[in-house]
Image 1 (cartoon, rainbow, N blue to C red):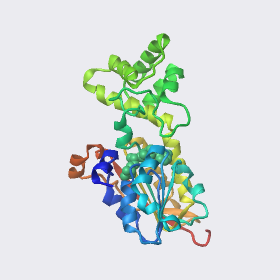
Image 2: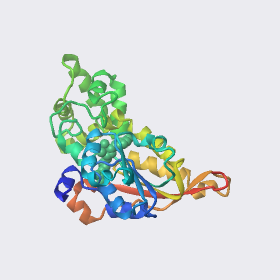
Image 3: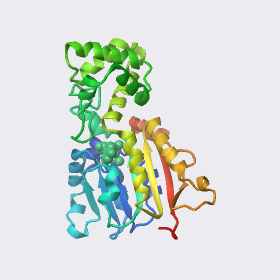
Image 4: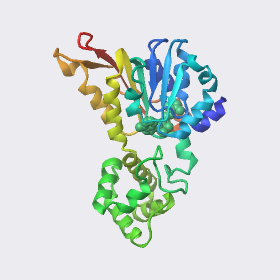
Amino acid sequence: MSDESQSFFHIPVLLKEAVEILVTKPDGIYVDGTIGGGGHSEEILRRLNKNGRLFGFDKDEEAINFCREKFKTELERGGRSRLELFNACFSLACSITKGKGRWTGFLLDLGVSSRQLDEGCRGFSYRFDASLDLRFSQVGSTAEELVNSLAENELTSIFLKFGEEPFSRKIARKIIERRKFKPIKTTFELAQIVEDVVPKPILKKSLSRIFQALRIVVNDELAVLEKGLNSALGCMENGGRIVVISYHSLEDRIVKNFFKKYSLEAFKGEEFETKLNILTKKPKRPNVEEIKSNPRSRSAKLRAAEVIRNLYKN
Ligand SMILES: C[S@@+](CC[C@H](N)C(=O)[O-])C[C@H]1O[C@@H](n2cnc3c(N)ncnc32)[C@H](O)[C@@H]1O
């Protein structure tokens, strides 16, 4: 696949940094929980030998189909292919790969791909007129259903909690007013409401915050992240590494607290089954060149930890 079609889908963020920490053994078992356009996976495969394995997950069927095409040669090796793809949530990866061996590395590159943002028909971006869907997969309630059914207080608290939007209450009130006349069905209709309430200088930021808040709720992103990290811990081998790239403070806080909860210091010599050696005291950030060539990387934070299993216990 050419570089052009790859970057059309998504430019991988903190690529070298993430894969360098993640891949410690060329014959290990690796899980890319958010394969997207397969940028990180491609680099992981490059570092594996013929005995290494990679399981790629994505909730979005389109991403999986894209990767099926991108990694065609690898997948067509039949029983000898190092790669397996799953159109499923990463929080189910541990149970789905049960019996295939403990993981050497688990990678999460959270959020949306550029393809999802730029494609315009899934409602992820306020820049394109589309139905207010915002789901990664085709299951569960859409943003349209939430926006047209939740009470003013519920909408306010979603915008506050998951978007930290200062005009949350006013926007929620306006939504209730508007939907009395006609249901809010599209991204542009919602964006117009935000525009009617928020001062122009902060409009773009508010729009991003409102769409982010709805996306988090529609996909239950924070609970899924916590569940995914907890279940992954049970599947990791001793010395295996967890690497997470997040794009906003709510996600980053979950990763940071999860690492802290299982960190070596937290146990202070007590009995443990699994603990974590934090490898990034401070999160790694993209450098100026990366941000310049890929502005979407600017908010990325990478955290990594190494798993230590009590070999007497498990
Ligand atoms: C930032 S992109 C990943 C890009 C990828 N690392 C690359 O190099 O192309 C995030 C991807 O995660 C997927 N995703 C989000 N939440 C998910 C979940 N809970 N389970 C599986 N995939 C998820 C999205 O559909 C999207 O394709």
